[in-house]
Length: 142
Image (cartoon, rainbow, N blue to C red; front, side, top):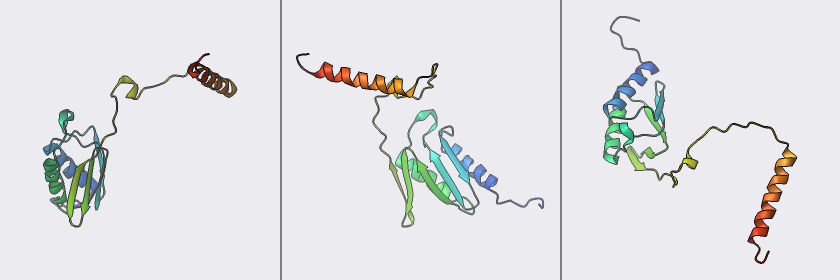
């Protein structure tokens, strides 16, 4: 490659995208992206640093800057918390509704260690016995 010539690799595109994301304060631990020469795909959560939400206006500015990258790529967004799509030559940005959760410890992912093996027959018998005991507990007068 000649000195001073710019390459149009996906690495250059990734670098340009990352610079824009950092400039807009995007939390890069929650957002993932991959680039080719013609497309940039975004997925995950799009939030500001310190887990703050963007406004629609802020995201419109972010998308506008991404669109104006030299040799502008096609942008695809598959985000958990925002809907961003190009429709009829303009960009539509809206907040996705997040599933309602109690937010308790039981909702968090956890590792389960199985310390013993059980036979399938024993598990099925236990399930039947639990159902029967629940039914008998609900019956009045027993």
